[in-house]
Image (cartoon, rainbow, N blue to C red):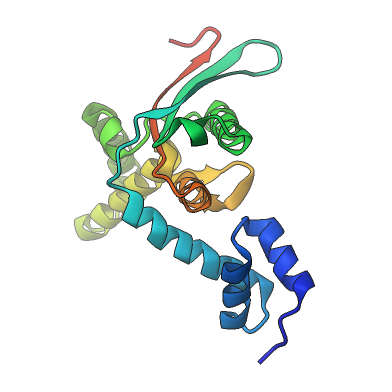
Length: 199
């Protein structure tokens, strides 16, 4: 069993914002491996986030982000449970990062249910036509199309997108981390992305 010292706990706290005892426990569980301890805390944060998922989010902020050059802008409404959390610098920074991510990644909706059926159908038709060119049997074509639709969702749904500042995590992971830090349920209610000349 690796010896857990104060420097290791401090390093883990700096990376995760978790409490001292949580960090110590995670390091012990991971036998002193910092990366494993980070994963351990993130998994616990996910469990906490799932427990809080049903709680009402009636507070929050609307943030406006205008990209340099003023040709691209994003408005995003992000909700939490209390006004206290909504006013913290950490929450404001989190929402600002979300807005910047939306500007860079062009999501079509928050979740899968937000993407219009006709858009998905059009993509499916294109993928099927492309797959048919390969001359493979229908059974395999279906799997190819299904895989491409899955990839389309991951690239188009905000919650499933890889976070631009850390591609090892998704936006859903980022939200779960924030839920475990604040102790409140957090949801992205809506967003609008404006780009000059685009409808």
